Amino acid sequence: MEVCYQLPVLPLDRPVPKHVLSRRGAISFSSSSSLFGAPDPRQLSQRRGAISYDSADQTALYIRMLDVRVRSQVGFEPERRSSHPYLCIDFRTLHTRLGYGAASASSAPERRVHRLLSFQRYLHSSRLLRGLPQQIPLHILDEDYTGQARCMLEKVGNWNFDIFLFDKLTNGNSLITLTFHLLNQYGLVELFQLDMVKLWRFLVMVQEDYHGDNPYHNAVHAADVTQAMYCYLREPMLEKSLTSYDILLGLLAAATHDLDHPGVNQPFLIKTDHYLATLYRNTSVLENHHWKSAVGLLRETGLFSHLPAEDSLNLERELGSLILATDISRQNDYLTRFRMHLDQENLCLSNASHRHFVLQMALKCADICNPCRPWELSKQWSEKVTEEFFQQGDIEKRHKLEVSPLCDRDSNTVGNIQMGFMTYVAEPLFAEWARFSDTRLSQTMLGHMGLNKASWGGLQQEQTPVPEDAEPGTAGADGDNAAAGGGRSGSKVKPQGSRES
Image (tube, rainbow, N blue to C red; front, side, top):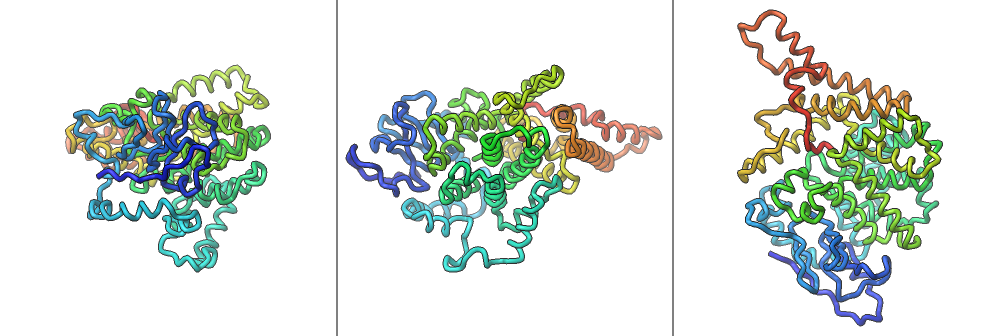
């Protein structure tokens, strides 16, 4: 059932009331209008995931992947339907649960009221404070947990930072808490004169726009990437060269780099003829969507509305440049360019474009650094990303689609996939990063990756049954090869088009 909200008709010479610009509303900007000026009420459309330009503009932004129609005066339909059976499926049903239909049917009136809540009432009704009495200040609740979380933040620069524990201590709000702490620690809130209410609202919305049902691409992954990015920003080569603007961009890009990820990869969207694949012409579909989703939230909250319009646009473009760099299909392009700079020793961090390129490489490293974490953390991430692959494979089987590489749980294992990923993707990238920043952290990451690879190889060997008529020594040789990444199984799992990032 399609839910439409009636917006008030306003005279063109009057500003739009603030309640119209509430959390669930949508703003449709004309390409000729001022960036932060009052929108034409005739172009207002349903938010529920969209801030779009005029419908005639070919670069229209559609911010969500949810199966919701965003309507305009000329009747433009962002979602291009076809006869493919998958397109009849709502993205929200990828992880269906009992009773979902009933909950959805009953939530429409609540959403109608929710749009008109003030920010303070919205905060108390959001997931951040759900279940807590409004009259009780947050800081006196669960003092043991909040105290431990504060102690962990004092060591947020440690590479063995346990983001899973931190997420529990913050009651599932690791991304909000961590990002706010880092922005404040660098003095960026004061330096860029960020409104605290707008900033907090932006971070709440970012965390809520990650899909909690995704085993891997969720808010905890975003928090983990943000913490890793912070570790890289503290490396001597970057710490002495990066500007406050660079640091702000790096942290925001890390926090939003997978915003609204649906839990399926780009080839899946292309072969199901999803409208986002068409919108972005099958090129960096997810990354473009993450970027435009982040831009949508920045504009909706007005976090940088106090800056000159040109500065805001430049920030949005550079944020997109960082997020687009996480496209794993362009890994070799970035790695070749990075290697060339290192071979020629011509990286000059006093040059703004060179600093931006290094930030891109740092975000790429942070995005796929799971194999470089200590085993206890790395193993959990490996299991989560593999489960997300397998869930996509299950959907493909259910709808009679060709199963994507690495997504068939019947023919792949966690260790098999991870050893291939480390061999073909992670090791080449982190080897070059260690050339650029030869520090204790770089050597620690390479050391952990070697140990983790050997551990997966050992587990693979234990799980592989040895034929009774096998010649003595055969199993041991195969196990050694597997542990080194050169085993028969490992050589077949080069992740083509995989989306660990």
